[in-house]
Amino acid sequence: MLSLIENGRREPKLSLIEALASALSVSTDELLRRQPPSRRAQLEIALEEAQRDPVYHDLGLPHLRVGARVPNDVIEHVVGLYTELRKQRAKPTATPEEARAANADLRAMMRERGNYFAHIEQVATAALTGAGYTGGALSQGMLLSVVSQHGFSVKYARDLPRSARSVTDLRNGRIYLKQESMGMHTPRTILLQTLGHFVLGHSAPADFADFLRQRVEANYFAAAVLVPERPATTFLREAMTARDLSVEDLRDVFSVSYEMAAHRFTNLATHHLGLPCHFVKNDESGTIYKAYENDGVVFPSDTAGAIEGQRMCREWSGRQVFYANDRYSPHYQYSDTPSGTYWCVAFVDPGRERGSAITLGVPYEHSPWFRGRETTKRVTSACPDGDCCQRPPAGLAARWEGMAWPSARAHSHILSATLPTGSFPGVDEAEVYAFLDRHEQE
Ligand SMILES: [Zn+2]
Image 1 (cartoon, helix red, strand yellow):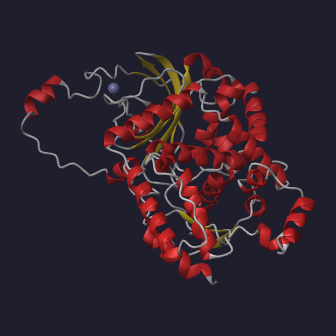
Image 2 (cartoon, rainbow, N blue to C red):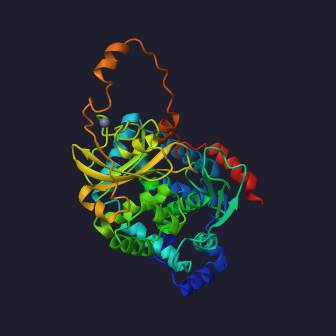
């Protein structure tokens, strides 16, 4: 029974804690402290945990029992070797092919469940309820109360390592953030994504697929706290009844970015409203950054099934919005594609990363519920047929083939999004540790 308690599988009663403390002649405080009582104890715990790891287990060595006479140096060596072994074996780095395959698997999993994660919704609802949330957009005070309820405080630091969006000091229960937004991520979303990892019980990612899954779940948690399921669903149902569904309104009511509102719509649309849909984020050149669908729309993809980094059809709304006279107003259109006709709304968020369009679309038969359904703009897209827009018209090709030498712009941001390295991908651990040390005594 003690081992169940030690491993966190069972919660002890207060009376039991008191009895244990008095039997061991220590205070209850000491018993409940997370930190090991001494370096020696810390090493022994680390060695025990190491020996339970399959990576260690696979070596086929007999279990090492640490008696009082085994010196610290020896345990330190074994633990050091194990740590390095684990690093070597379980690097969440991936080849481009593996990264694409992991992305494709994740997308298939999201499609299967209509992008709705019931367990994360429950965790988010519980966190909000615990903080006393009653409805509407999440205030800063409410946000901090959600965070403190889970044992964390928030600190803003100007010298946060460049490779990290946030750094968490698990010893002192502090989450360090920068005050300004990073790309589309505001300090609020970064804070909640960070908290999401702990609330959802994530441990250091075992491989690249694990890293991606954790990131999706943490982002989902953040969105589910900022745009809570119950009030958001009520709001969307009413809008649907009024035939006035709109991402803009969802954005305004919950004070989030357009991108988060559109993405959050995909979480709730199928499960609660019975609407299949798709979501795309692309830049002005048509390069796709994020994509989701469960409505049968066919995104361009490479042979491994990767969509990120592919160029989207020029006729689709996410590209047409850039040709519109007013690119900062929502752009509505119907698109006839080989997999059917879709109604879509695309929007370029002016305050955010420049040149990204967010598109939300649904099959034609579901368009009557949406604001913008009366648009008369209708396009035909034959992609992936190369004659649609991927190949230049024959006349131009005949004139210019062999006579043009474009110099490509490097898409380093796409590469870094799919190919991070290190045990926390893309993060400089040495920098992070130095940072934490610097701030610990504040
Ligand atoms: Zn096309």
